Length: 118
View 1 (cartoon, rainbow, N blue to C red):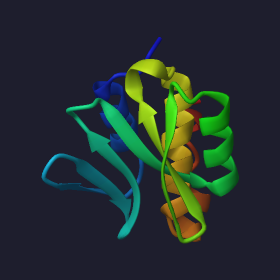
View 2 (view 1 turned 90 degrees about the vertical axis):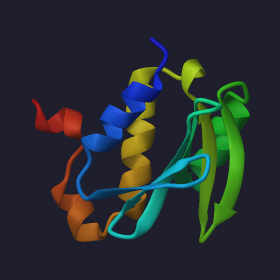
View 3 (view 1 turned 60 degrees about the vertical axis):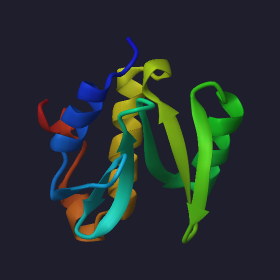
View 4 (view 1 turned 120 degrees about the horizontal axis):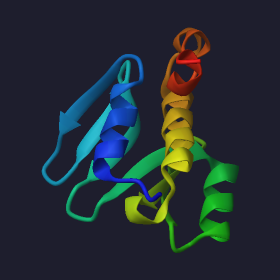
């Protein structure tokens, strides 16, 4: 089932120490001051931090779902079209973006929320 903006918000809300900031046309998400994501309601897209290799693979394999956003500090950011990605895959991408930005001790102590429920 394709993801929705409500799904994305629930995913972000399930993560530890997430800070949200409203921008003009977007909301940004950080963990302890380090940015890991953006949400644009007008386009129903999210921008997520990934490794450079993951960014290239996602965009190459499914350019209808993912777009290259930018690269910074050795990371590649991807734009994800919510109506074209499955909820389970988005969950993994959101968690990975958060994990790449979280301090190591926090990331190590915070397994994916879906594993905590098990």
